[in-house]
Image 1: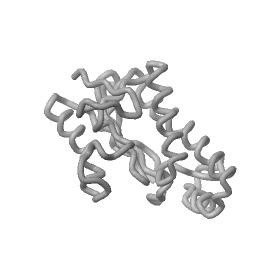
Image 2: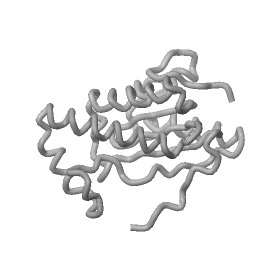
Image 3: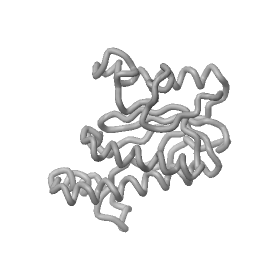
Length: 177
């Protein structure tokens, strides 16, 4: 497998990031798994590892606009911690069929684990200007609408759209750009 051409160019500036579950499994259809992701992102924000400008969590992937020093390392930490936590939860919850799918999806060179939750990479795209930032935030917020899950972006619980419409979402969001 070849390495991605995507990379974090300027860690302290916003990047659009996508993290996808292997084989597009609907892991985040479970509120417990989605909450693990929220807790992990919230912890990184609280520890001032990165700023979250926008986010959406769907059943099998998430999009973020984030910035921070060592952004690649922080995204890797997030994926590692959330994967371990979700796999532990799947074991406790007795989700054997899902665990089997995560074993089957594991890349052959990943000899240090029994399961793989996330696809490799996060496809970071450097936000080059204010217009691009607006475009990515709009894309993120419209994602559940385009999929037909909700009529309005703010109706999706796992999104920063509420923050941008004057409400309070589930994660702290930086709207100063």
